[in-house]
Image (cartoon, rainbow, N blue to C red; front, side, top):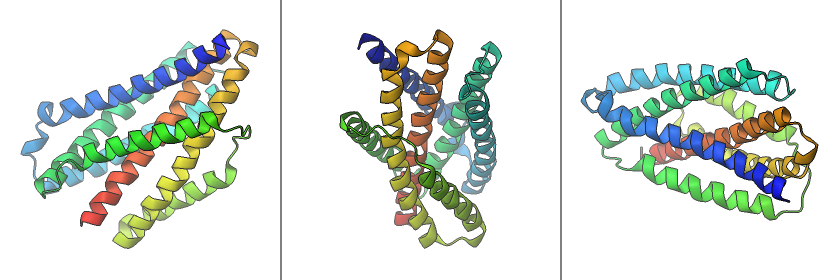
Amino acid sequence: MKHSRNYILSVYTVFIIELLTLICSMAFSESFLGLNTLSIDDLHSNIISLAVACAFFILVDCIIEWRWIDKNKGGIIVILLYIFTISCENLIYGIAVACLDCMFKDVGWNNIIQYTFWITVVVFVSITIWGFLTKRKDYDHPILNYCFIGSVVVGIFNIFWGWSWLNIILDIIDIIIVSLFIYFDTIKIKQHARKVMTFSKKVKFLNVLKDAGNIYLDFLVIWSSLFDLMAESED
């Protein structure tokens, strides 16, 4: 029981560290980079560039988790590479969200980023509690994966179509799907915690990184979908 609690505590400690790193990146971006002095057009072009860069690091992060960490092949180089990609991802995402915050404030939509952050925290904590209280043991969700990938693909095409109603629908779908991801990932953390006594130190550490990375990415997707949904609704 003690080892299980320590495993769960380790996962959520890594998650909180990653989240705090992102918040610090956002907090210092606006003032340090002088984003408040940029025009809307400059901010918009910066966001597109940052989104592409962030997507690249998310892809690299997923490859690291799927190809090495998930197969327990992570040595010190892979672990350092994981930390590097997460740090770059946080920095770029933090700057992008700071740019969005400046744009929202410039058009009179104050505090959207802050409101949606706390809504995401409430959603995340509620679903996490639900996941820990449930007796379900199965945490595989291949259909949800396909649905989410389909939503992302349609969203990419919608950048060129520019249909705001479709963007709203996709945001709602993403919020529902990723909320279920949080539920299943919480069950996965529970199952890993129960088996932790059979893990070597290396496997335990790699599983902590993977589980923390999964719920952290879930948090980011819901938060992004929420402030995009609110912005589309305001518009």
